[in-house]
Length: 314
Image 1 (cartoon, rainbow, N blue to C red):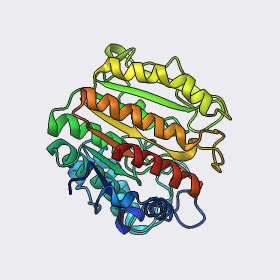
Image 2 (image 1 turned 90 degrees about the horizontal axis):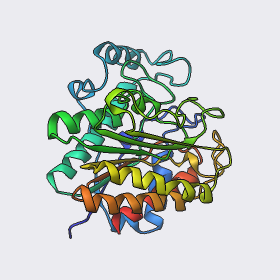
Image 3 (image 1 turned 120 degrees about the vertical axis):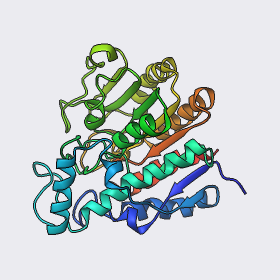
Image 4 (image 1 turned 90 degrees about the vertical axis):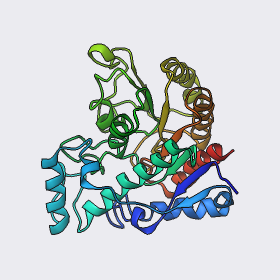
């Protein structure tokens, strides 16, 4: 049987997490997977194992000096990789490289036409900069993915859509002057939430002016707010005529997350996914990759990510 969607699951991918008491714990993948099985979605998708990226692949986005630092801290298991959000642990380099490698394995499947859609739950680490970690994010798998689509596969026009509660600053500012990357980022207003960026008047720089759309939402924004804002997002993506779509589907925008203040339900994630799959069918040979992103209430992430998976597989 040929499945449309490939889902990446495995202990090596789950290992990316910061301990039991940390919001980004290693139990997040299992919470998602248990719900996948409960809904029977594991019968509707192809299951694949994680892969680890090479240093050369990681350096398509990150600086060699920063990669050196992660490797050193990974050996010692001490200190932070940023200013206090992202602690090192022994093996963090291998864990973070596995997030990147799994995303790159997924994109290879998509480009080769083996599966037109892939979902990587522990991915979408959208705060990491080219030269440092930030906000629980060591390597920016989305950034590496974008650079890889360009350098290895010749894909020029890409749409990056981010519905995580936090602004995807690590992606946004790395590609702020890239006219061929359409970015749509719906997030809690930076006046109320880390990283404090993503104002509506930030629309790209230089030749890329007008290729980025930030849609900051008020604390407590609900599905009605999402549905009011989404048509602008959808029209903006269509206008860019993308050849490939990346969805960062962070579940921390769902009501009840412990570190954000939004009130979407998984319906928002389902609706965004369905619309993006339709756009992909029209412009991109159906090519969509979804990256799990944030989400620190385990029930929420299980429901939201499976809403995404269900829409991708239908």
